Length: 127
Image (cartoon, rainbow, N blue to C red; front, side):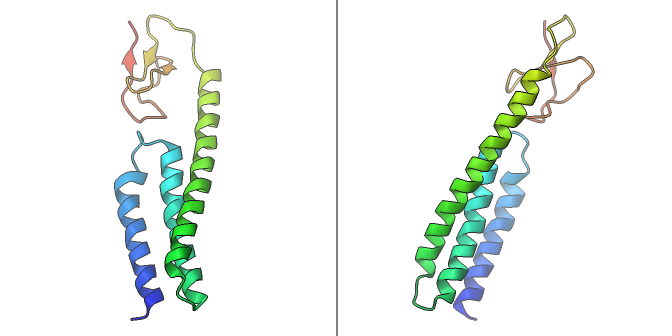
């Protein structure tokens, strides 16, 4: 088995394991999700490119790719979070006796919404 096939297999396993465990949770921030996914994809790309260079730089390529991928993914995820928060602030209803709130983030929602679209938890009635 060649070194590049082994590296690709390890990276594929890491992406699958991380995707199953952490990427699907509603409570995890998009910044974190973007950083994890970007880091893994960057590490895989860096390892492959470093190995293809042929001068034994797969480790350095992996580290550089992981760092740049995590940074880029985190920035994109953070921008997505800020956009979601801005939309949420603009659509927040005026508090009434039937207004619901998210117990995780405290965002307000109208009475017809059952689950928080950001955190995925059941909303509670604001008293």
